[in-house]
Amino acid sequence: MHYLKVVFATGVVPGKWFGRFDERMDGWKAASAASDNPLVHVLDGTADIGIVRLPGGWDGLPETNVDTAAMEALDVHRVVLYEETPGVAVPKEHAVEAVGENEAVTLQDIADETVLYRGVDPAAVRENLEVVAANVGVVVAPRPLLRGVNRRGVVHRSLAGVEGTSVALVWRRDRDDDVIQQFVGICRGRRASSSR
Image (cartoon, rainbow, N blue to C red; front, side, top):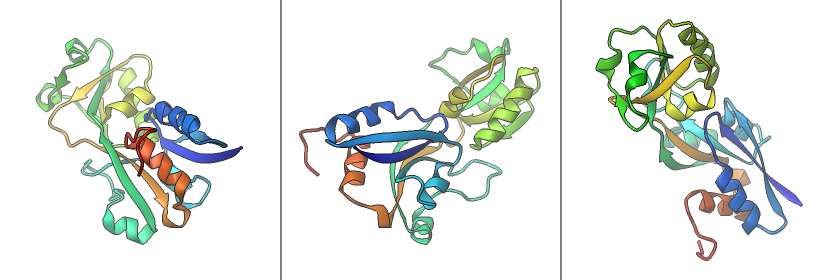
C-alpha cells in the first residue's frame, strides 16, 4: 500500500475527498493530518500536498497569501478550490446569537465591540476565544476556522462586509505526478468516469 500524505488547514473538512481518492486509486490511501500551518509541511517535504487557507485581505497580517509571485519563489503549484465565509465569534447570550444560522451579522452589528483578533492564525483564534468566552470582545476569522476551534461559551455567525479567505491545494513542483494530479482532480470535482 502506498500513501499520499495530505495535510490540511484547521477548520477545513476534506473527508469526502479522501474517501473518493481511496476508492479510485488502487494501491493508494490518503494519509491525512490537520495542521495550523500546512504549507510548512509541504515545503519541507513531510507532506505531499497541502490544503491551505489563503488569507488575502485580512487586516493586520503579513503578506502570507500564496499568489503567483510567491508560487514561483517557493517553487509550488496552487489550485484554489473555494471561498470561505467570514465569521465573528461572540460570547454566548450576546445579541448576535439571535441572528439565524443562515443569516449574516453586519459590521454595524459589532461596531461597538472590541475586536480582540482579526485574522486566520488558529493559535491566535484559540487564545482569543478564551477571552470571548469570558464575555470580553469578539473575534473575526473564517467561519470554518471558528467552527474548527469552537469553544464553550462562544457563538459564531457569518459576517457580511469582510473579505473572505480561500482554500487551495498547494504542492511542490518537484513532487508533481499522476497521483497528485488524481487527488487535485477529485478535489476539483472530477468524476471517476471523466478523464483529465
